[in-house]
Length: 281
Image 1 (tube, rainbow, N blue to C red):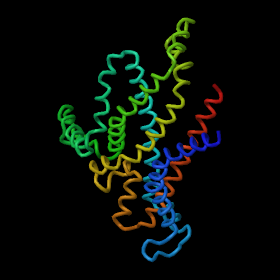
Image 2 (cartoon, one colour):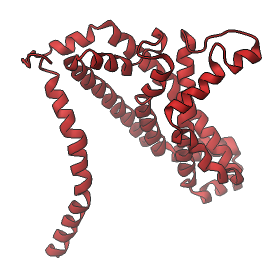
Image 3 (cartoon, one colour):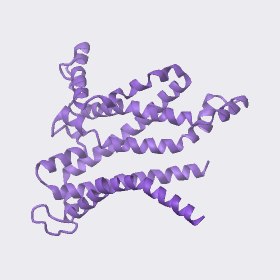
Image 4 (cartoon, rainbow, N blue to C red):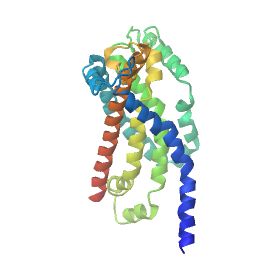
């Protein structure tokens, strides 16, 4: 029995070893190197303690970018989750729509430059929308730039979120829903008391993935507004890009550690909220 269990444990370890090594080599070790660099100056390589962190937290550009990144996530994540779930429920109710679900991932397959080119064709000051409306609104300046960026983010990630919601809905026990309908429960009661509680675990995963995708919108934003966008659309990615251009690697390291700490704390907080919610069910 010992040999059998020892072999089982060893086989599990060997199965996980390639993934563990990949995470260590490509994620953990580079992050530890960044953490180390955040306590040293970039030019003289002298230990400076928390000076880099103080410089980052006192930097007005970093504060502005952090605020607008948090605002961007606060606006986009609820919209993306709610719209994606609504479309998934519609597709689950009308199965013929699922035949086209591969097309919903098409925006993610399109190059970022092509996406921006299409949106500029429609929403630029001289674009098709202004030509149709007879106006000269610049959708890529001021507050409009923030909402355009949010629109592009939701449009690009909606198909992926939709497919994840569809997979989650397929896992909801059909016999439980059927029993609820036989007991007189309507669509609203079945959704809020059966379907939605069953989606809690999947909702956490989708939320975390969508949150991580918030930090991947720099390519589209950069192609729209360049390295210095309107203040309303100034995200953390711009700060890191400008620090890289100025060779401020010490600030980049400290800012990256702070961003990772905030993102990790947010995920842990969400996990705690989800666990408490499941405990009440």
